[in-house]
Amino acid sequence: MSEKEVILTPSGLKKLEEELEYLKTVKRKEVAERIKIAIGYGDLSENSEYEDAKNEQAFIEGRILTIEKMLRNARVINDDDVGTDTVSIGSTVVVKDLEFDEEMTFTIVGSAESDPVENKISNESPVGMALLGKKRGDVVEVNAPAGIIRYQILDIQKSD
Image (cartoon, rainbow, N blue to C red; front, side, top):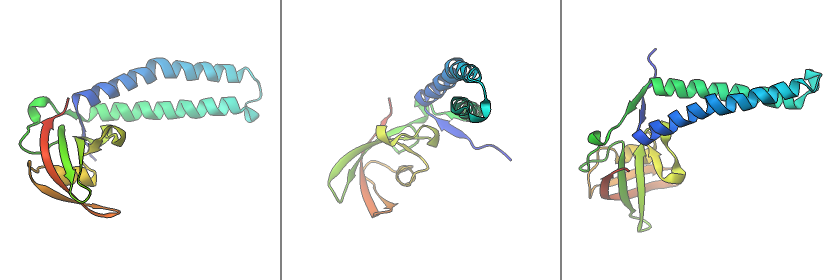
């Protein structure tokens, strides 16, 4: 079974590499120290500090494995791969919500680095899928839980 390709922008790759380094060099040591201190409290069967530290250790090790797998399967989108004629992964798209007459800006990224708070939406999200391959001036319809949302593409730029 082949593993799923993870599409990243250069900044998304850097962010994952930094998180991996932090988890391996800082968090692992912090949790190991917490476990060592908790063991010193004695009876492990009723030691909540020990349980909490072991749970955090398991979470950190799981996250490290996940990031390493993502980096193994990463395909980095370079600026050369991103045009301004059609929407692609790495594009920053300015759209107008035709119902509410509001402008919004989205950056289309791979699912691994999507962050709605920063208006980074996944290429696999309903809005991302609707925008991909479209051109300036096109109107796209997105099936959302609240109904159909219609956006007109005003501008396509390379993301920073």
